[in-house]
Length: 209
Length: 239
Image (tube, rainbow over all chains, first blue to last red; front, side):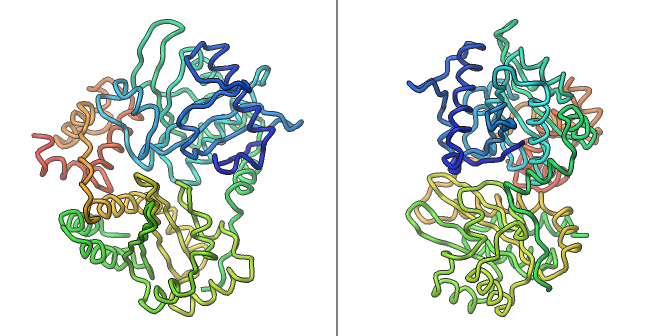
């Protein structure tokens, strides 16, 4: 299932949280060789984790971590502006309608439905919160994965060559794209909305006016 | 539909106003323009200092402070430390204290529907911009569908202005437009379509939309037409 959890609520899900930060270490340090910080428990964290971001996590049926990603609004500190500002057209991208998506991570052995499920979660955020775009930093190897799940980003700028190529990309999310990733993930739209409501509250009829 | 020229005039006036009074004038004008019962902007900084403006009655504001309703107000609990907009319908009003609080707020003239935009400002500052109205759920859903993005942007423009007029605070330097954003705004000002602009800048229309979106926010505008007009009047683009 998809879970939407803010940083200040991660402690309600200690096992899932530990697994997320460990899988991030496996992906970003071990597999991609990024210069990230991993603590003595094998968990990867950076300064943006301290800013109370919104995480979207795929929880496997056995309770384990299938994959995750992290969101922050571009009105505050974000990686694309702080570190990769030279790749976004010469000035920061700032709008409450544009959020940054980073640390897109898949657990070892995660099936293709997990990546698609996470993308679907991103689509729910856009649709329910009025967000128009996500921006994010990603590695050349992710391009293929994003394309395979039917949600390829537009590239704003890139640097480096080959496997070391790092890009800043952006995602919009049309209704068709949503239907496509929902299909790839094997999740009914009503199920996806129900998970979203479980995290952010189910709309109830207002008291009569 | 809301008159977008009037809307931009209100925001332009607010931005040009040097004093907190400008925020109060603007919020009353916006409330009238959108035809809702109330609009309120409220901030708390890291030192616990509060500031607010809006259309709630003095009696309700005094009652709220006197009863310290910050403690039980589900809107505060649902928005604090968050950065996504919150429809009051998604909040938990089921507790006895929350139900009594809501009934009392209605007696003081608040409507049954609400939409709040939390803002995380610099140095632990937290602010909330709220729209409140009395209508049925279908009408409210339509209002949110039509105006949620405007409300999110307006919320941030109020916060930007409030930070500027805070005593003893240096205004934040205006964010510059990037060369790409200037190119895009210039071509739009010259009357090119989005497709033509994207084509001549050799970028996708999605990418162009991000440049426009970001420029629009930096310029304090709600739509592209206003953003172009402001960029021109400030001499940021020359056509």
